[in-house]
Image (cartoon, rainbow, N blue to C red; front, side, top):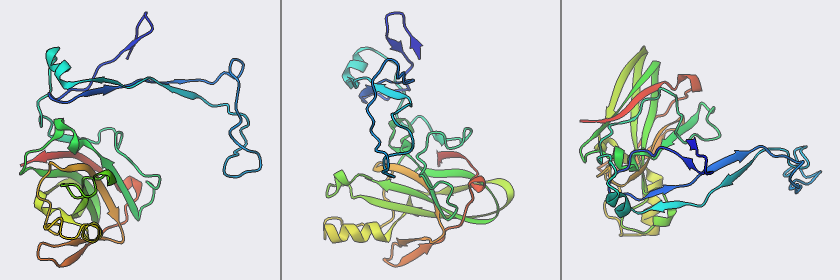
Length: 263
């Protein structure tokens, strides 16, 4: 990011796929100067929910710009260089850990943890219809974890053509502390009992194939790596139910690398 002499900032943009609109905004953080600005005490003394001993506020504050939108045709007319759709196979190399993943507040909970990314919905990472998903993992002993695909993860889309479903692929790895690769295919992802039963109750007869394995990657918005010692119940293609086992993983045991699409 460059601070220009005219009071504007200039920054590099990530690769853009042709046909996508561009949205941008800026956020700046300022140190609060109570000699120049008045304060409003938002916390009430004696109230444990609002008062933490700081009265009045003494921290930083954040300002955000308006949202800038450039339509796809404007970008095409400007003859910018586009990134081809599906040109990036590596979703994450973990060289910097989980730096751009969504982590829960309970990340240190060994019995239940997850990390999520929306990269499968990014056109740059969009896989072919028959792509497999691979990841390298290092364990000492036997561990279980899940790769989870959320198809249409927003309640806003309930009742639309694409059902809100969560698919799990259960993975068991046994190792001696060396790196190994595990690979799952699209058909290895099975719908969870709770997501199927909820939709069948809300929209009876609307989605006839809810209990089938995941049919396509195109509708996956969120990909998650997860483990739960209680396991997860999924539907098999024959309609029966299986419980995928989970394991306890301490934070330092979660050693992954090279999450990627492949053949």
